Image (cartoon, rainbow over all chains, first blue to last red; front, side):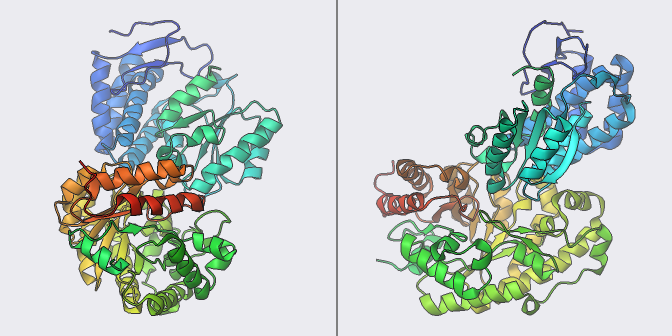
Length: 250
Length: 345
């Protein structure tokens, strides 16, 4: 089927979104590179992407069910849903599709996966706790999209909602959260990430911070300036970032 | 030397004025000039008038901006505003909490909105100060984009897709308000209205959806505004809908830094003036030399032949942009913006 394991290879999110190494976020999940190119699943993934941007929920459901019947639910997510979501993010970032399409598409994915993927905490045991918050400002759409993408990818994440600096730091420490995703729209909120970073570093909590939102897109240096460990250019980037960090890779 | 009004009108007429007009859209910076918090600054019309006049003297921008903050329009609908010490005020909790609330929504009267009345007073006082020498730029949020503040972006996207009848009713309410608000500003002395419409950007909705929604709203709304308008997509992309925007008859378009000014100038084909597109977020950390490079680059791409106003790409300079950068932009616009632009290859 053209899906050869390549131990030790890195994640390779490509423009087609079809070559990537998936760690699955699951303890004990075999590390491998999935290359769906040229496979029936690639065709399904491509059809899924088209159905998603057309917001065709019945078609998305049918395609995903077909993938589940062929590969099982976990691999259907890994080899079909995640690439489609990654491609949506890339296409939005390059200006080829709109935010409303990626939002509605990710919500459809979330709902379909939530219904068809087996629930259970067993596969997430031992993984570092991950949470997402909107820092300081009141613009919630970006966070909602990241949540949908992560959930549609089968990755567990806590939703902290909107928080100011002190509340967020307190909650991260109380929960022993190790991966913190911060979404902002306003520049002043983006600059406050630096204060969160300082407070968490002072507590020696070993928290990794990923940021996303408009200010970081308009100033590619900003995420480093505020002390983040990574920046997502679209909601789908959160998938590879969280997977990487949940596996303990830099 | 031309007055700012002559310079801007000449550029809008797609002819070359004495130099490239500069819209340095400093709003909150007036509070810095007066040593006030942003909240205090916007609490009295006299503060904003004084702030705008001091900014005009310092940076010699080619316009005045009575605009306070976008959430003011939501205040008119019964909403509140959250103020920050270091950035633009945000609209508070949504005034439309459930889609059903739209069924009972009525357009507020401008005269009943204390904040709107304050903006009108600022406009009148600025007009009394500068007469017809400096354009006074009013702002109205488009009926299609206002719901992001009225109900939140996520519920609004779902409304557009899932409840077309309620969406149509919301547009009707907002349109009535927008027209009254824009015309009140023109009557108070505004020279033109910036029609802020970020949701219509292809960054946010597809062209297909735009043609059914934001474009129709603009086609209906703009002719009812009794003065010149400029559409601003507030950092969002727009090249994919450039002909649709031109069809609205707008006189100018605010362009994103994510897109190429030369492409915009070519695509405009004399139908509207291109406004932009300095990166306001990066501007915060520019050196004076970088500011000069960016100004020179923008003028080089779009300055020839008029039809171009140099500005930031969002329609508002961030609070964090320091004075020396703003002065460097002014100096560079003077140095490189003088027509004819013989240095441009």
